[in-house]
Structures are given as structure tokens and as C-alpha cells.
Figure: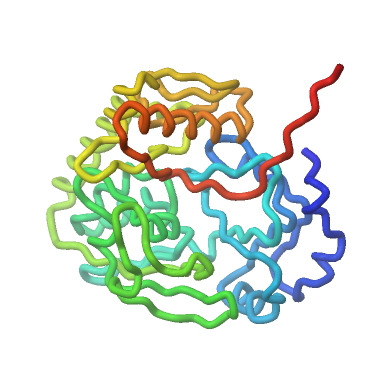
Length: 314
């Protein structure tokens, strides 16, 4: 896919600092997100390690937009792609260490791997993470949760780096955890966190993880191209019930569809564009508002530029 003209800046790479990792111009992102849609990153930066990332940020001009991309499990990348620099953290940011009842994990560590490490160390409280298909960085950003637990219940401290390249430590209060979000600046890049659990028998933890996995397989379209829950639950309500009441179960727009199995999950049936998916979501919001008077809030994070509408041929 060709980037829109306002995104093409042949001088951007030349303005970026020297790094040890990799810089890729016009890097395809479609296969980086679970919905399998979206345009390219103007520049994709894959830092070698934390020092490389900090050096880059300290020397990157502040007028250049910078954002982090995890595994794209709760993300909708628009068809026009992303202006500026997209940072993709590699294995150096995914380490997991256990000491006593504490786990220290990098932002790129998969939630499932953290849950498994906790189980192996006989640490309870992390089981819900096995049902969240993302990284710790994403879980911190959106205070991911399930089965009555949230990321905030585990966090004792968070390490982050500012847009200027300064490393800071945040307390849970600094994070401003709320339902499926935090109040910290979107410019902060999470490096990792220290998480605390409680002692339990590993076999007990394993049973709970198996129950969570089975429930997820039975209730969610996990084998489809989806991004998890599309909308956050309004207070005292369940989003899927509101969507169902508005007649949107199985609703289609182009190649996008609200799942028949779990109607708060949006699916790319194979040929959807990001515009199809976003427009479908907005139509669901409109119908729910019309039916119930409730405004649904997107839980899926939408980023990037939309393509202008194509002119029909004569």
C-alpha cells in the first residue's frame, strides 16, 4: 500500500539519530496487528536494547512523532499508516525475573509468559494474564483485566522513559489506573514493571489458568482476526448485552463483522479494510446510543491516518 502524500517525507530518516538497532522506512504494519489491516509506518525503529532506545529519544527531534507498537492485539491501524517513528521493542525488552513474591518484567514480555513464570514460582494473582493476548506494556497502558482482576492489582512500580529520553519510576498512584485506561501521558514509553503476587501451590494456579483458558476458548472467537473487546463496559452494564439489544450481533460492513459468538468482538472476515472496521464500530455505537441512550467507549486503540475516500469511476 502506498502511503498518502502527506506522510511521504524522504528526509525523515536523515533527521534521525544514529542507532545500534534498525530503521526501516515505509515499513508494512498490516501483519503486526491481529486485525491484519493498516498502512505502513513512515519509519519503524527496532532498538537493540534499552540504551539504544534512550539514546534515540535523547537525540530525536521533538517535532517528530514517536509511538510504541506491541503485538497489536488490541489495536486498529488505519489504512493511511502512521506518521513519524513507530518503535517495536524486541527480546531485550521482554525479560522476566522472579525474586520471592515479586516479578520484574520488561514491557515486551507477553502477558501469558508472565502468568506462566508466576505459576512456576508458585505465585498467585497473575492467572488472569493468561487470557490477555498482549504484552505487559499494553496491559499497563490500558489497565488490562479479566475475571475480576486488573493489572493495577499487581503493580508496585513502573519504569518508563520520557520523550526526552529521561528514565523515570512511577508508583501505582502516578499511573492513574482507571477502568481499562490510565492517566499517564501517552508520550511516556513503558520499559517494564515490578509486580507482586501471593504464595500458592503451583498446581492450584495451574487449575485456575486452565479454567480461564477453557472459558476464553468457549466464549470468544480467538481463531478469528480480531482485536479483543471492541468497547469497554459502561458502569454497571455489559457492552455485549447493549450491542445485542441494539441488534448488532453479526452486523456486517464490507469485510468487517461483529462476532456471532461474542458480539463485542469485531472480526476481519478476510477482506476488511481498517475503514470497514472503524465504520462498523461507529455504526454499532450509533445504534446502541439510539436504542439505550448509552455512549459506548472504544477499548480497541485506533491509531494512524485515514485514507481519503476514493472517487468512483464513471
